[in-house]
Length: 215
Image (cartoon, rainbow, N blue to C red; front, side):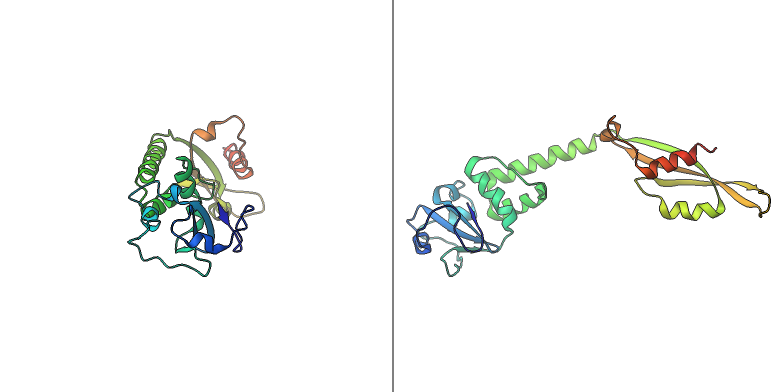
């Protein structure tokens, strides 16, 4: 249970002093300025953890309290929520803006051994999938004049990169000076998700394709 603006969420109207007594079922925590309320049983799920030691009748941790009697913990509250929920139901659920590496840092700080093991396994599985993901390289050859080359270099994006530039001489246009011409070899990496039939090339990719068709 998380709290904001110093108010206890839910309908519990008991005074804050109730949570200060060590024999109370409930424990109030101030993690990085955000209040959390949980049971002593939940926090003591791992007997080797920081939270277990904090909740003992005679704790061996010197932890300060704020004016409401909540234990002060100088950690990121965004990550403490998933850590606390893991102690509640045994599952790690992370929002999209949180990373497994960040959760691992918090799990190691609170010394929750089972959570540390779980996150490390998840990271290993994720990295293994990334390593074995097949990559396809697409190459295109573009023809351009000297005055176009600088513009192409400055606007090249969308994952494309130059591999080679080959001079093929010059061309003469009526009423203008000779223009040096080049063949530009560009490449792009396409992973599995790029093979989807629903994905459409971007406008910049279409421009590259049109220029490539000139040769």
